[in-house]
Image (tube, rainbow, N blue to C red):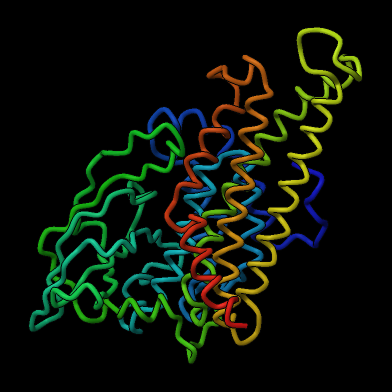
Length: 380
């Protein structure tokens, strides 16, 4: 880890995350090879409580906090970014499932709060009202952890009007998974494509997407009052921070050898001790800066009363900015690792690929986040 993990009393999730990280690290190569998480990693994520973290306590859930989850995701990401991303998905999508009507929540968690919920908010499906609910069809790409899920949430346009969308919960037995995940980064997330073909979804298993996008001010659970942009980027940036820390833990050993053995000033054909020292300090500082940004995002999201519009926009901005800092730091480490860092047996190249892949997520793009923030900040 970097110099920046600040000491706090460990929570149950934080302690469990250490075990998930160990298991995920042991199976990282296998998960990459098969392009889906090893079953032992899935079991560890479920057993640690990630799936139940945001499940309402009335259904056996933890009703946990955003900051606690963020720190746990970083811990797992230090050993395996794909496992951390997957843990984030099942935690975040369970939070979203909490927007369902009471009868729908009872169905999703009828067998307990550890049901694995995945999904996509891309409004690429279509839903037609029927007498008993809705007929849902569509194809959603890049659904992480779908091979291991129990339920999935999908966003779809209703009535043919793109401005009107709903979120639908569909059990695993009612959709087809196509094996399409062949990326060079985040391989183990198994983010395959889902096809739903005219599935009847009862009214109890759907809710207006605006409830999720804007938050419900009168919700019983505080994390259901948070607009999506106030927390969404954090769930993708935290695994990337963990992966960047994993890269640093490996690369700093290489850099340390150079710092101890090379002259302070350039005297040959290669970099000097000073070059590696300044590179190490700069990368460590950038990772510490990202930690501070993401912890502020988490604290802002879970503050009493929920974040205001400007704070929501700032959270989105900070997650996108953090992502830029992470990819800059990881690329700098990789370019200063020599040929050994490029070996397929080196964890550095996996962390490098994973960070560069993770930060391409639509929820971490700086330009739209900057526009949203500037529109509000300029009026202050």
